[in-house]
Each structure stands twice: as structure tokens, then as C-alpha cells.
Amino acid sequence: MLIEMTIKGLMVDPITNMPIVILRDAENQRVLPIWVGPVEANAIALQIENVAPPRPMTHDLLRNLLAELGASLTRVIITNLRDNTFYAYLELKRDGETLLVDSRPSDAIALALRAKAPVFVDPRVLEQAKSVDVSSDTADQERLQRWLESLDPDDLGYKM
Image 1: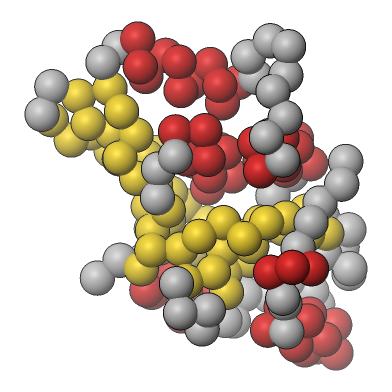
Image 2: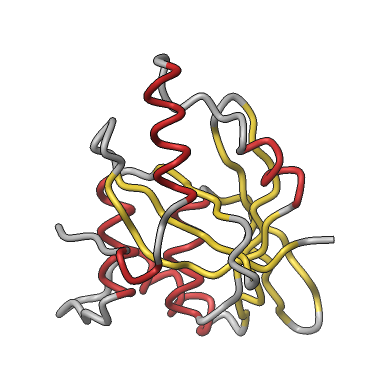
């Protein structure tokens, strides 16, 4: 059974200085960090902060395109984690038909925010993510794991 997650915010990994999207389940028991690129983080941050750019950004264009084609984003599903890479699908509805479109999780999350669609994660991904090798140094891995576990939603934020 898929687990619904909420997008709690963006942070910068203190070890790699890469942006991290923080997903958390409804019971606040599980946290899923997904490392993303700076461009994707900016697209997510703009929407989290309700900043409307003067012209449509790529994810705004995708949302508008879906609407013009009579499709809607019903949900995002993060389906897999292989070789430290997350995989996701956009679940679209059009004319009563469900379509699954392969997507990078960062793009899927940016689009989900704009379409106000929920994000779901396969429970196997949550289990696999516990052992993601984010650093070659064990001390850094342990420190980052403790840091992620201690996150307070009020501390989340990302500044460009």
C-alpha cells in the first residue's frame, strides 16, 4: 500500500551543499530526503513560497499543458530507488483513462505542488532509503541520519 507524504520543505545538505526535498508521512514517523539539483530546488522553492514568476516556468507550462489537453495530475508516485537514484511516475487522468508518465521525482514534486496533487511513496522505497549511501564517510552518514531524524518542520527552509 502506498504511503502519502507531504512536502515539508527544502534544506541544504550540510555535507554536500546540495538541496534536499524533505517528504514526511502524516504521522511524522518517516522522513524521506530526496537530493535534487539547484534548478529543480528553485522550481520547488518558488511554489512553496508562492512566488509567481512574470512568465510561466517549465512546471507551470506542464500544468497549463495538461489542463489544455483535458488531463489532470491525480498524484505523484515515487516508485523505486536504484543505485541511489529515485524513480517516479505522474498519474494522469484524461477522459476516464489513467496514464502513468515516467518522471524524475524533483520534476514530479514541482508539478504536484502546482497542481495541488498528493505525493505517494512505495513503502519499499522508504525501507531502501534508510541505507542510501549519501557519503563515503561513515561518520558523515551517521551525522546526516541523526540530523534528518531530528528535523523540525519549522526549521525547514531554502533560500536561493
